[in-house]
Length: 119
Image (cartoon, rainbow, N blue to C red; front, side, top):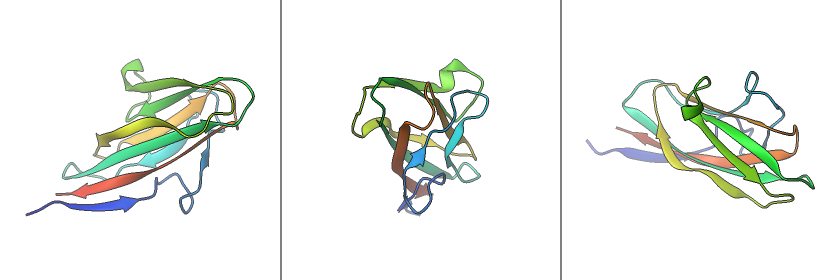
């Protein structure tokens, strides 16, 4: 059988709108996307972020895990930055979750999409 692809909103988004990163701690990150269950379906995840503040801000993305530094993607976003690619199509499956927190609350917005690949 051939795989099927469908382009989907990030599950943490409402109707495709930006997701505001309201958390500043690893203990209560904002959910960006939750992948479906099982290992025969995969989500190719694309996430972009922008910084609306007048200062640079570090964004930490917990990619599929929450306790190990190996699960983190960290990037400093310049002041008043446009959308910057944060997650370039990495794959996850099996109900894993992408979450984020930032050094300053309510100044980072993320958006993106998922290419859902069904085997």
